Image (cartoon, rainbow, N blue to C red; front, side):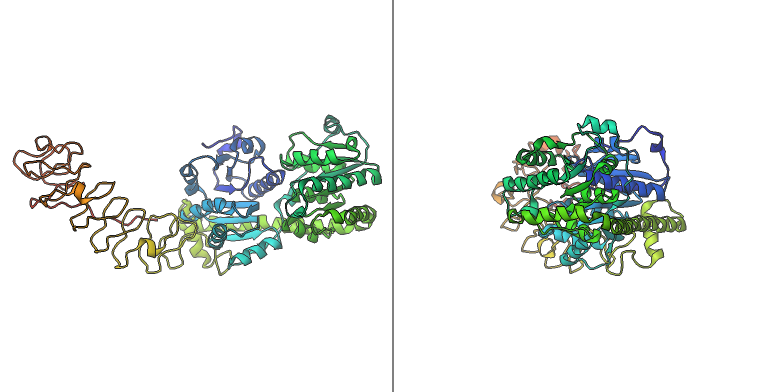
Length: 581
């Protein structure tokens, strides 16, 4: 299913650019990133046809007017998504934190499929980590090496990729959401949320404890954050407003409220707001304390003093670049330290305001660099296509690779065409991209392409079954799914069950027939090609000539079907052909 908006921009005729990420309304930060990525691509190529691969196509279509087409990629046939890839001129991965355990392989499987189809690929300020799962690590190491450019949003992500073993140039910029434009959050909207006009406001963002409070049980964690909220209410004579950045945050906000001694001074935003409106709400705040990365980013963009409560490396990294205090986790015995940091943040902010503004300007400029790099890649692809005189993306990207003479991602990886192994052999379609060391053709297996599994030791062609087995005696492979052969050396039959010679090979030594029962006519006539009763009167010519593979019977074979053929009674089948990757 592909969704297209009804607005007039859906008829754009420029390059088709795909954007793949964790989009679909699950997280306000991810939606902010998509808004900024689409805005960047639209600014660089106003005529581009932007295709978003979304986890919730209906939500993306309704909330992102810059999307010309939306394709769901979760809960649908993989072939449906693969059909979209060949028409793309570029596939953009990200941005945001999508390269982590259990998820990285899902995104990179589609990126790898695009590379096989010679679609250039670009990693747009992605976040990486944690990456401890072997399958995810292999996918990251292999697929990112073949991307045309890899940009990450923080130093922490680059270190994770280096630890995984990725050997290529990786550029560090900043989170794309730093370029988000605010939208009005009006006084009328404030009243609808029950927030009194003119009150001093403290914004809070809470989520599940995670690594920020791994030594606390959930109840103690909620009680600790309630202490912080109560302190701010008393210290600043303020109201506390909880901003859920994901739907699950609402439950944790209610739990913190339930532990507060002044719960009547707390509110939870319940409206369905766009990322720009959430950013617009921040201008109403006097101070912010939170765990979610994009809550911290939005507060800093608005110039609000903010105390990050880090739960992962990405928040630590942003707090460091921001020059903001960042506690190393949250523990019950550190409650006094946490409250002291909040107090100091409030007292010292007037002196730190200018420094915060300068740091945010630098971070925003770094975020724009990602857009510029993506635009430069688009320009190279377009120039190569024009030089080649071919409008097809595959030809354009291949020509671009030749025209560049190198890779945009550095000497260790990345090519405009995204095609296979460095030795020039055809790419396979699995996530590792490996090929047998002996140079034999790759098999059709989607898992490991291990030559010990799928390539015969004698160098003969691989068989066409999915197990890769071959008879130990070196005879041709059979076409069943088990690979076994009769112990007596008779040719294998085409039965898909057990190849038991006692079932399917006649006692008189005649060649086995090709039906599924193994019987033969009592008169010794050659077997026919019928799969039911082997009645020679049905399918064997009256002149005694051998039966061909045609159900009409009679005449020489030659139609490439399995049975029928020579008058000497031999039975044969077409030679197996290696399956392309």
